[in-house]
Image 1: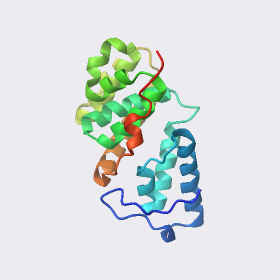
Image 2: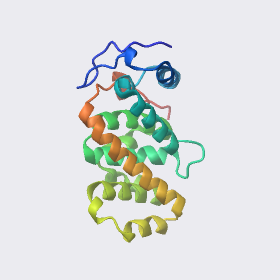
Image 3: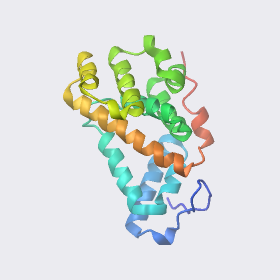
Length: 202
C-alpha cells in the first residue's frame, strides 16, 4: 500500500519519499498495512517518523522487543504503564493512542479514563499486581533520582518475578523516552482514536 507524505502532521517538515531507500519504504508500508488492518486508519505519528527513516525503523524494533509473544507482562499491563507515564508527562498524543489500545484490551472505557486522569482513583478496580505496576511507573517517572531497592521489593511483594520487574523497568523507560520526543514533534492525533473502543456491549 503506497502512501505519499502529503500531510503536515507535526512541527517538523514532512518526510520525503526520495530520502528513503526502497527497503525502508517497504518497512513503512508493511507497518501501514498492519495499522489499516487493526484500526482502519493509520496512526499519524507513523507518517511523521520516516523523516529519519533509520531511527524510525530502530524505534519499531525497540517497540517490538517489548510487545511480543515471549514477554513477561501482558500487553494490557504494558499499555497501562504507558498510560500512567504519559499522564504524568502530559503527553496528550500518547494518552490518546495508548488509551485507545487499552480500551480495546480491557473493554472498559471508564477504567482506562480513570488511569488517564489519576490512576489512584482506580485502585479498587485494579488487581494488587496492576496497581503496584502503576505505582512503580509513576515513581520512576516522577522521582528517577530516588529509585532504590524499595521499588523492586514492592513489586516482588505482589508476586512479580525478576523477569517481570525488568520488563516493567524497560516499559516505563520506553514510554518516558517516547513521551519526550513525541511531545517535541507534537503530532496531530487521529480523530478516530478519541472515539474508537468506547462502546461495548454490557
